Amino acid sequence: MELPDGYSDVPAGKMASVVTCLEMLAPPPVRAERAAAPWQLRRERVPDAGWYRELYARVGTEWLWFSRLRMPVAELEAVIRHPDVEVYALAAGGRDEGLLELDFREPGECELAFFGLAGSLLGQGAGRWLMNRALAHAWARPIRRLWVHTCTIDHPGALAFYLRSGFQAYARRVEVADDPRLSGLAPRDAAPHVPIIEPTR
Image (cartoon, rainbow, N blue to C red; front, side):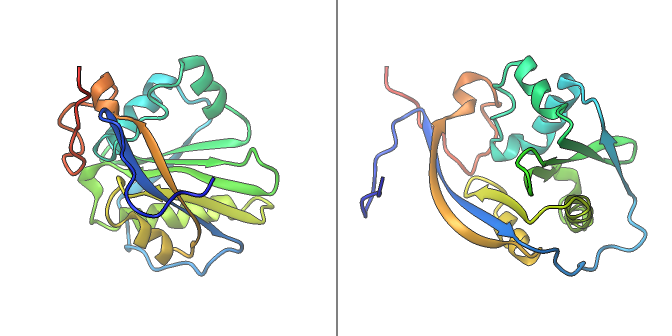
């Protein structure tokens, strides 16, 4: 369906974002990263749903990540424990502070399903360090395409970071969803850059 030009109303209680879909069709050159980085990457082969959700929230609450918080536990575990899904934690100072999830369930492809850092690591080079390892793990399998999407609610530097990492944009979409702060999936004070518009009663 083609969207009309101009403004479209978004119902109160909902939020809207512009989603950019990106892909790469071959491994890019490895970009320079911080020397002697103090981080470790650990794969969780049988991720616990509680551990996963805690890390997911630590990384994504400020950017209103919500999809995995509203999934039933059994459904979530079926995804993150699937043999063609790889879940990694970036550890810093003995604490898990970054999430990387690679989804190989579509033959010949890999989705960079989730990629993010807790706020304490932003601006330290951890994003480049983690992306270099994400690309290495993704392209270690016989894939033809690696893809990811980001949106205007995400970190303001996310899109530029993906482009610098070698991804190219191929599609743009509009996503409308219930505001997770109104259902309790996210704290009311999360993501102050996205004002809450209360539904009328």
